[in-house]
Image (tube, rainbow, N blue to C red):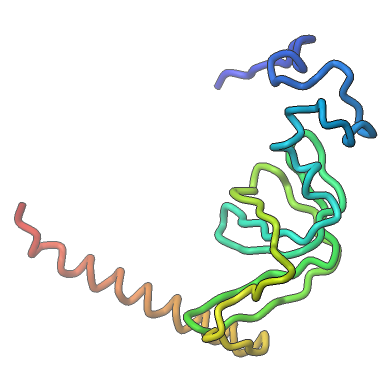
Length: 150
């Protein structure tokens, strides 16, 4: 395993302006900040994690590693046409687990009209049924592999 050490030119390598500080977000001259998480501060976001979970919440803080703090966070669980928002409260997300971050438009419906909100126990039951069906499908596929004679 090879380890990479950070050099003194860290800000040059990653294109961070030398005048960069945590309090200097406002200037339009900071071109690099247009793609930064700073533009999402105090906005409602959807965060997709590597394990497939979807979190909703208001971004309150972040750091250079994309570690983020969501306030009023909830996990949105979707199974078929059913969904449930499981409340998490204040939630810290490790940056390496983030796949996607997007701002939610508060003026539009978050979900299509055919989606039905259910309780946490109902969504857990639906998840279990879906997982069992997926496992059965996988085991049936393994049993029938001998038919593939490429």
